[in-house]
Picture 1 (cartoon, rainbow, N blue to C red):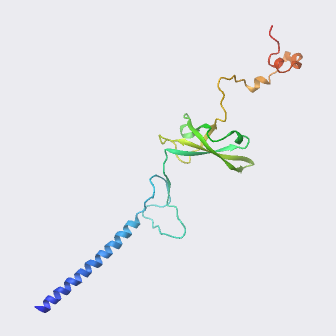
Picture 2 (cartoon, one colour; picture 1 turned 30 degrees about the horizontal axis):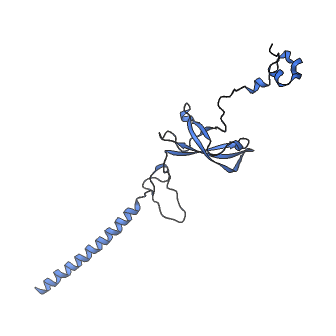
Picture 3 (tube, helix red, strand yellow; picture 1 turned 90 degrees about the vertical axis):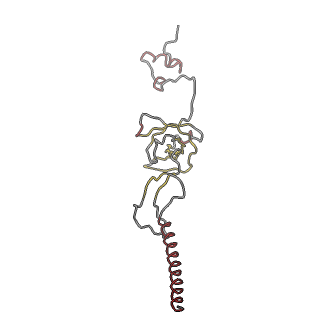
Length: 192
């Protein structure tokens, strides 16, 4: 009796120890499994993936980029190279429009938010970057698209537009009237 009881109690204690050990192993394995899943700290859209599912990824001193994410594609920023001859006329708050090859028949509105002070020189051409904010509510634009932009530096309403070539035209019989100044060049024969 007593020996059998002692063996049974020892077996119960041993089984309880095995249960505790199994629970500790389960807890460790659950933690490792949770760490095996890579989760983004932000909501967004994956733009590119540098690793494939199933590849081993280890923590190291060098940070490895696993994914490139975009938080919100509804609002984009367009970087526009502005020639140094034009940069003086470009400033924050100006309206702009641009097109992309994917939708060549559509013009997108944008607003200049800032113009960089640092220049870039490419093949002896100096440019400055203008930053334009773009509303992409329909998600038709994608990061990395090439755009052609026009920034509206000035706007004048109710004005007469005369081609520059018309101001330089001199009719053949206006030679004698050429000494009369600008009016005689524009109107070679004075009205009667």
